[in-house]
Length: 302
Ligand SMILES: Nc1ncnc2c1ncn2[C@@H]1O[C@H](COP(=O)(O)OP(=O)(O)OP(=O)(O)O)[C@@H](O)[C@H]1O
Image (cartoon, rainbow, N blue to C red; front, side, top):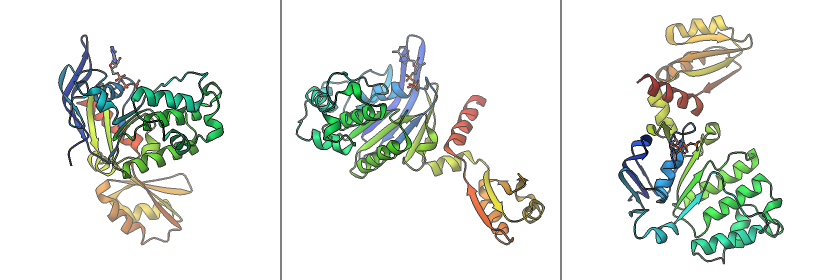
C-alpha cells in the first residue's frame, strides 16, 4: 500500500533558524500516529508542510502521492482534514452555520453536516446555538466536525485534546479509532503523553526540529530498555530480595515491595516472585512520559 504521506529528508529554515532538520517519515493508510515533543520541537511546522501551507527549504513532501503545495493543492486539500491548535470560530454564527461555512470553503457538500455534528456529540439543540455560548469542549467538538468535512483520507490534529475533560477525550479517541478502521491516516500532535498510550499505532518523538525516535510503544520500550518495575504485595522485602538475588533491586514503602529489573530479566524475575506467598503482583512498564524523557536525555548526551 503506498504511503498517504511521505517526508523525505526535509529541512525547514526560517532565516538562520532551523525549524526542522533532515526529517524523513512515511504515514500509511489506516495508521494513527502521535507526534510528540516540547514546545518548538517542530510539530506544527511538520503538519504545515504536509498540508502544503509552507514549503520545505530542502527535501520533498508528498501527500497522497502529490506535492501538497503544487498545482493540484486545492483538490488535494479536499481529501485532507485539519484541526489547528487554536481554531477561532465566529461567535455570532451557530454551530450549524459554522460547519456550513467551512463546507462551502472546502467545496464539499453540506448534506451530511447534521449527521457530522451529531457524530461529534453536538445534537440539534446545540447546533442551533451560537458558538459564542459554547464551552471549550463544544468548540473542540465543532473543530473536529470541521476537520471531518468531506470524509478526509488524511487527518491532521494539532493538540486536539488540550483542555478537554476525560469523558470528552474518550469520545474523541473513539472517533479516531473508527476513522482508523475506515483506513484514514490520522496524525495527532500532543503534549499529553499518558493519554496517548493505547490510542496510537506509532509514536514519533521530535526535539528541536530533529526526529529522535519513531516506533510502536512496544518498539520504543524495547529500544529504550528502561528498567521495569514489578510490585509485589504480601511478602516481606527481605524475602523478595532473597528470591531475586542479583536479578533486581528491591525497595519498599513498608506496604508494597517494588523490584526494579532490566526488561530482559522481567520473565525470570516474575518466575521467582510467583514462587513466593504473595497476595498480589503487578508489572509497571515504563510509561510514555518516561520513554520520552529517556529519548530526550539520550539526544542531549549525544
Ligand atoms: N513562521 C515562523 N517564523 C520563524 N520561526 C518559526 C516560524 N514557525 C515556527 N518557527 C520556529 O520553528 C521552531 C518549531 O516551531 P513549531 O511551531 O513547529 O513547534 P511545535 O513543536 O509545534 O511547538 P508548540 O508545541 O509550541 O506548538 C520554533 O523554534 C519556532 O520558533
